[in-house]
Length: 254
Length: 213
Image (cartoon, rainbow over the protein chains, first blue to last red):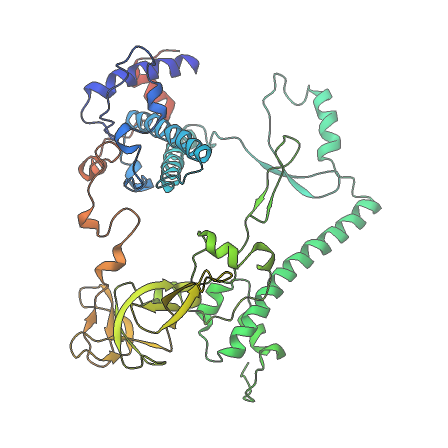
């Protein structure tokens, strides 16, 4: 992997200055000064330094990145990475100077582009692995009960021995992922689920109360709009609730 | 910020932002909002707001509207600012009040004329462009299949104004000047360079570069 990285950087450098049909044109040439080769790329361009407004376009979308070849995506990743480093350096510099950074949404745009790029690369890798191997090739996560009976994610590790031979490791797993389901554990699980259900019910109740206030104030409210705003609300249960009875004396139909 | 876990590897990284329930004329990304609505007051009962579906919202910046209530009843103006969370709209120059700011000691303060918000479903009516009077408006589909606002009385469509296109980067999409260093041309973005190959991303890149493991 290290070999791959070093060769990429050197070839990408050559490509930037010569190639004109690159996805992103970083017109600035690479280091010309011998004193600090390339370090100036961590900072904003000199023309942009004094400005209060630097206008840039929007982030790269998934649909647009899916059209590009793997080499193009590879190059784009490093271009975005360098831009991200530059913006974060400038963010820190402006913080130190106690001055507002111009257009700090650029950081979010670059982050979004990089997330989308990673998603496209993952899609392509998943497709290959599922076709050839039947699995996604990414690290699996399995739900297992821990010692207290709660369901937790188990992320498998790579081992040099098969699990049938690896008795030492299996002994440690026994305490982490083995549930005996005896009396104390069952008691705990009952109370734990009570706690979870109470929290969920409380969340729903908060939304129901707000929705009830809305219905009291606006009796002809559109139910679709209400459910869009308060997704945990049950409209039928709401209309049967006594809390929605307002100052007017009309009876609400269930 | 409601809660953020302390720095340190022993803490599970957790970040809970504050849910903003009460929106005001100050926008939540400004300092002025948090001065008047501090974090300690965010748990108070929020104001009751008539829910309007996001896709049915039909009031945009630059729309010509007629005011139905208050001092400026009957007058027409253009929408200046929108607070969708409260169904509020501000009309330029109308429905104003005088407010003093910065009163301290002997200094009487600066008096400014401030636009007060209007409720979208009660105090406002979109103006029909043909007869310049307020009408009821609905979202409908034209014969071409385009979804527009159509005035119920006359049937004319009210297009969305140009001012609504404005963002931080441009006032109108067509007038945006490309940043030579940072932006990619639309023709280059749309260019298809992908040729599907039976290889992973890493394998393909290594093949292209001639790297052999």
